[in-house]
Image (tube, one colour):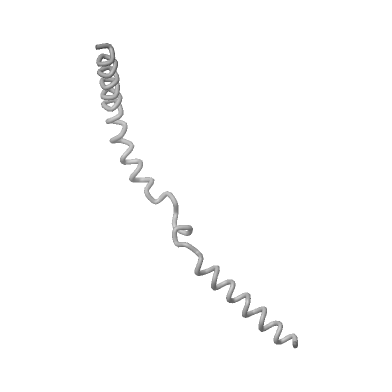
Length: 71
């Protein structure tokens, strides 16, 4: 084999590996992971308002279960 043939084979192999790697690249790996941070921020305001009501409802359920177990 000549140097030209070896070089051509190496170039062909490198190009095929590069093309395979490009095909494997996933779009989600490129996209930012925190695209919905503003939605979470806006939702947090609503969750902060609902937390006391939720805590009260859980406490009431626990009281009912304790009362039912005492009966």
